[in-house]
Length: 257
Length: 382
Ligand SMILES: Cc1cc2nc3c(=O)[nH]c(=O)nc-3n(C[C@H](O)[C@H](O)[C@H](O)COP(=O)(O)OP(=O)(O)OC[C@H]3O[C@@H](n4cnc5c(N)ncnc54)[C@H](O)[C@@H]3O)c2cc1C
Image (cartoon, rainbow over all chains, first blue to last red; front, side):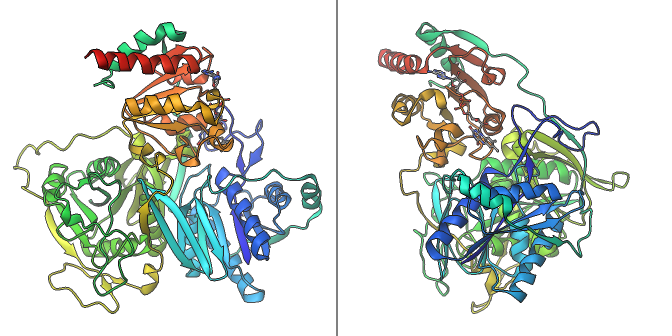
């Protein structure tokens, strides 16, 4: 099974987000970088599948040279191969990102045994566009399903499951396919020391991006941190002594009727 | 301006709508509830909010809705939709697009854009809404803006639609210009206030009911249907991916998290998997469900489907009672849509207090059982 996992380098966000002076980006001078929890689960799932069925996990990111750090993170977890679609630091929207990734998947299929399965996070934690995996699938003519929290993969195809409004939905897809996943799919492992050492030395394939046009039809003009969380709660009291007051408030809010 | 809004339906007593399979197509694999069996299907709250944004965008133009379901879906639906300002409703017969098939749904909507000349298509930013709209973006080659909070009609000076949308699951807001012949938007329903149904517009009387147009997509091997308004062709490939629905296996619970009226939240302060019984008891007493923080799911104390937050579920209850939860921004991203928040926490300096209306300072292991006892005593006395 040849599996491609696509990840995105994003700032690690702690207690609050600080913007850059021009209001167009997140100030990352004090923060590290990571990938989203959805993508961590995608990497873990791919490693588990190849442990069972054989094959290789390739991890791919579209981003600046510094995104090699995130590729090495995935290599340390068991990915065998890493590909950087190197950008010049400009922001790629979902259409350009999908075009570049689909072209890389297509060119690999032409030259080598192609990928059987491409995994993505359901959405990137920074831009939250919810569409790159689907656009890649359309460009390749592959079936796609999103938001998956349980995955059974065999040589014949995948059965992917998710919940929606209290109902379980199961999808059967032939391979090759695109599946976008969510946190909860599995509990990702921590990298082992040998894994980290191997990742440090592993080669990273760098691919030049061709034929994408920037910017896209959706153009960011400004970011802002929404207000809220500035007031202070009314403290009803301490410990069990506050329970009668709590009951009164619940009643007042109409919760007890 | 002509706006088309994709609506999701809700059948009472059933948490999701099931679709009938065609007699000639694939065999029924789901329980096959027919919409027509339920006269009282309603539009989901999230879809109504998306409809509100669509109505504001359409302004004096026209507002249409597209619904996937049985052709005689919920007798009252066209009337209800008219109250919300909808002039035309496009009903896509489930006997043809069997089951939820995101790519086929998007293909039908692409056909409706042509048919109606719609210049904006909106849906609630649910799992399905985002999925169908992303397919629509891929099919049409148009950009799609997810999780919008507002959108204004394009003015020449702006170069397109001016939108605000969520990034970082709502921790940031983005202002952007969407320059496209047809705007594809999903609406972050839990972050915008519910909109009142349109009052009858000043001059003319409101229409009795939205005009119903039956849409019967053209699928190879199926007989063409008479009387259908438009027949977008559905390539076989669009029907490869479709849902087979069944009840959630291990009990559900988190399933109704998104729509629960009361959510009792438990975090690290609960202390372990066996600490949740009093929270469960309180939740059922209040007609609600339990939700948890990410610490709780990554410790394996509770299944991930109960997680509230950026990478869990976004909730919109009347009351969120957050117990032993610090209030990290990734958690707040999932509960800021709650109407009221009450925190129970040992730490008066916990960040959750800056988002809560009320707080009780103390140990949840003492307070929750006492609260359960007090509520029981109260209802016994009544
Ligand atoms: C990309 C990303 C995505 C994330 N997504 C989510 C998400 O979807 N949902 C989510 O919840 N988190 C998410 N997180 C994690 C988040 O940052 C916090 O780590 C997490 O929410 C903390 O959980 P907690 O409040 O239960 O634990 P803590 O932060 O450890 O807080 C425990 C609280 O319990 C109180 N307490 C302890 N004992 C008691 C007691 N006996 N009685 C009363 N109070 C007590 C303490 O005072 C403290 O306030 C995400 C993080 C990242 C980086």
